[in-house]
Image (cartoon, rainbow, N blue to C red):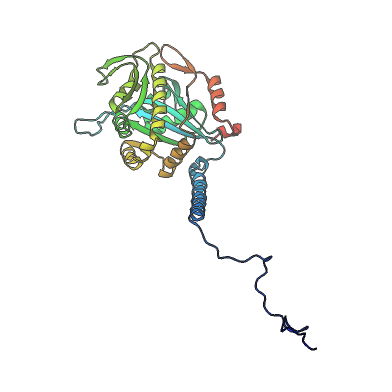
Amino acid sequence: MARMGGGDIGPELGGPAEPMGPSPFEPVERPRYITFRRALFLGAVGIAALVITLYVLASSWLAPEAAFGIHDRPVNILILGTDRTYDDHGKPMEGPVRADVIMLASVNPRANRVYLVSIPRDTRARIPGYGTNKINASHTLGGQDLTRKAVEDLVGMPVDRCVEVDFQGFVRVIDALGGVEIDVDKDMRYVDRAGGFKVDLEKGAQLLDGAKALGYVRYRADALGDINRVKRQQTLLKAIARQAVSVRNLRKARGILGIVSQYVSTDMSRRDMASLGWFMLRTRAELESETLPGEFSPVYWVPDQKRIGELVGTMLEGFSEQGVGR
């Protein structure tokens, strides 16, 4: 076909088309750049995911059910404070050792609570192999193991672990924590020449060092004697729990564990201890304290078995009643 005049105005009809450049209606692919903000965001997401993963793994491994291997009831830990004495060289002296403090801590992961039951040392109890006596005599007669059996028979629940600390160890642990904050309920003046200690405290909120804290829990010169004393023991243990999981003391955990291993006798493993610490941290170290139900008699604190059964039922919250058995 002949061309029209006026020069070339385009390709011949049916010929190959010349490239005409990108269409203004098609998106142009541009290079992608990771901005600083985007990198920061992705890094934060990655760290958050890692923290959550570690938290879930730690929670699983340190859960009381996993650490102690107990799934059908709370974990029960017997806490004993003994009156062992030492010579001038710091060596323990021979002779019978009495249990001055007897407590049962019941860790309930389903209710997210720790129940702390104080057992007055004059509680009437059946001591296996020895008949009826004050429960603190069990330690003198058969040590930690016999006291464990006596407590199990008394409350009708198994004891899974035991922690025992004497007066010197108590003082060292409190001092390692940097003291403990207590609102002393009244002026306390008391001298026990037979026991070799004295108490000299003023009423009011204050930071007690180990020696003063020991005097606070041993003071018994008031109307209700041992019953008021166990209430102060509960108050102190709650304060110790809060102090132990504070940020300041978490930084000193290794040193505190060293003192604990030196002065505290226990059958708890390091995983057991870590599990309890983790549980207390998650539950904000809240303890619910009770004194073993009972009433005064001329010689004993006489346990009320019906009310003890009701208390145990409360401690088993979230578990079936079958969890009471061993």
